[in-house]
Length: 111
Image 1 (spheres, rainbow, N blue to C red):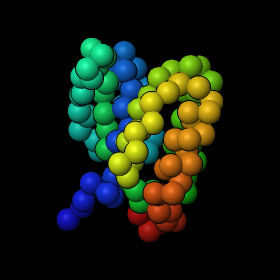
Image 2: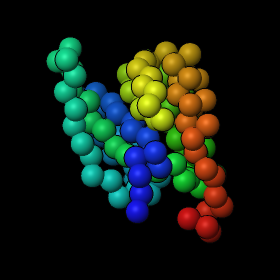
Image 3: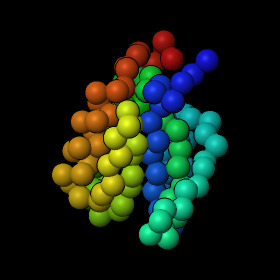
Image 4: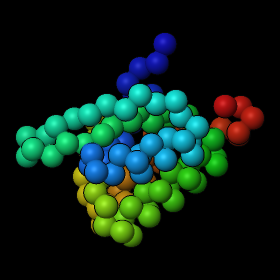
């Protein structure tokens, strides 16, 4: 049985839903997307990200996070009780560092 500590949550504004769906496809995740409305009225689409990833999936995820920062697209990542919200390069670096501390990498054949 999985626990929430074995997952992180990645979310993007509703208008960027297709980006998150594409990421899930690239990571080969069969994900049911959730939706969260924040107090400021913004609506975000969320997906659970398992903390056991192949090396290839980890590289894909890092590339996706950096690309969002380069185009100033907002994202929220919640992992280990820490939530990072942002769209700048420094935010992407914080997200990648936080995820790197939580992700366990396995060979593609082991997943």
